[in-house]
Length: 82
Image 1 (spheres, rainbow, N blue to C red):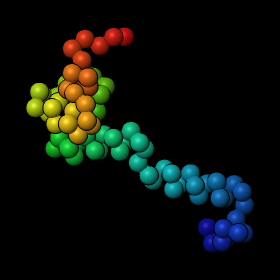
Image 2: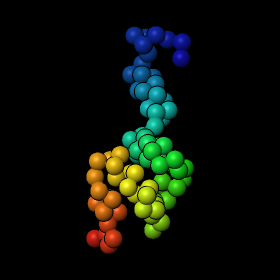
Image 3: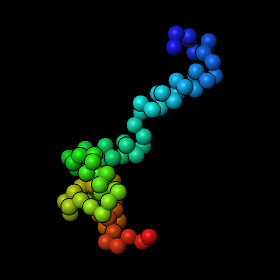
């Protein structure tokens, strides 16, 4: 767009914001990236912990819990209530 913001239409300004937002990682993506970095695991692995029955090993659970200032048992309860 070659227009300055004061010459842009309402819709053009909206589209610019949408484009900027699409380039930013969501809060969920940021969380996954943070946990991947902390645990030195891939983002795919972190997603598997979130969305499947697969869970991290005990040491990794402790590392995550420490980073999030909680207990491993709170993060990964033995039996989850549905």
